[in-house]
Length: 286
Image (spheres, rainbow, N blue to C red):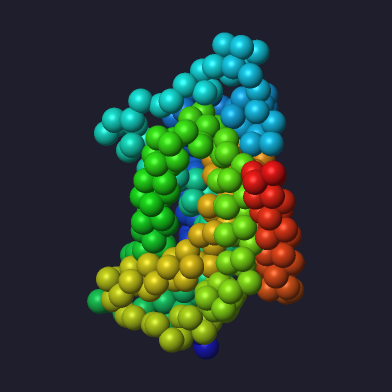
């Protein structure tokens, strides 16, 4: 009985340690996003700007009417190694801010199971940190791809250099349509099932070592990436630096993954995004 009591106490302690660590990481990530992620303006300031110039594809504005601030928003960024690194960390920290809250149940479950199987050779806390790092590494890979797409879209002039959102009806419609259709695919639903059922995932992929924990976290992150990459691509539509759009997408992801009828919510979201995308493409062709 004493051993059982000691185990339960250790589980409670590790749960609070894990929760506190995750909360600090999530708060720090959102804090950096709110500060502007190194872009020179805070998130609320950029979100409240008049984005008529190049920010709303359906409402272009003549250059001669642009204010100084709007002209600065339309000035192409000077891409060099330092700027590319800044953009990578902007994307990566933003992904962690948006995705870690919905991944917290899986991390806490891993922490509880790891404590029950803990040995001197494989202690729990380093494994928990490794699992979380593996999850973050998967989104680092996504962030590299996002930076490459951002550079490409800016280079061809269909992405606002300041707000990082579509200035082309075709890009806006294409991103919305792709996200909407992907929501309805079997691959999306398979990845979503893994995200919504961490017990099944952990039982199927359990590894004892710290390296194994990192691999488990990376695998779980890949399932999460397979579930949410198209929704994250919607940042190119609403604006990577639009705080309200970022927070709204994070809320959509959380609802889809965590609420009881989240799967049906995802189907409805997919249908709505598909219709929205078709509307933009119709306008682009009109």
